[in-house]
Image: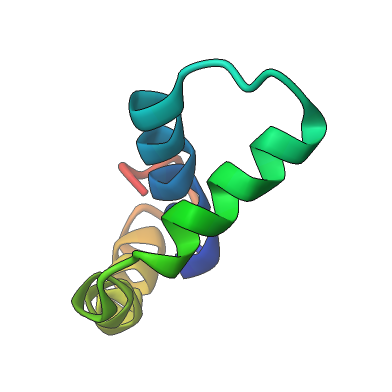
Length: 68
């Protein structure tokens, strides 16, 4: 339910879609920074604003697996 985990998943998916497999560790780092630098502020805001919803769902499920 951690927002940063959701953000990293989005970055990973976008990086993979845009670049495919990296040729080197340096390429991977550059690609991640490119995606990071272009994250929309509204995306980060939405993730932060959804925290209460995610926590409440986990509480309702009594800690069982949720869609988050």
